[in-house]
Image (cartoon, rainbow, N blue to C red; front, side):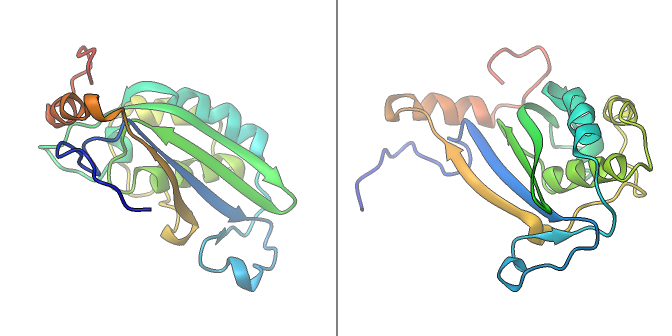
Length: 178
């Protein structure tokens, strides 16, 4: 289907939210050939209950600077509305939704949580890492091939211009429009 869109539409700045899924096969299981381009592997069995407990600390509006590539001009405040892990056999899926993401942010969050799921870090470590607002190169960044964009939500056409304007403004913690 092809149709005329609003001249105010911008694929990036008009978006209200974005959703991703990150797929992992753990416990050194064999990766099925048809999944090799969209699923990452992990050598240990992962504890999704510990992972789900940990990610609750990331939900809501926070400064995600610890999970973003350093850029002094970038505002790193984001509103994370969903982050949960679900197991289906040997496949573990992370569903992540936010108003916006920094470059590699989802992969960095998933990588940090993998250390918790593998038992190398306690669940409460994640909150401290978030609040520290400093990216640590020792925190694993999950491979790109496990990540898939699943949806982008846009406002109605009559709200596109306002959405683009608000998105382009620098987001600050106290700004209710960010």
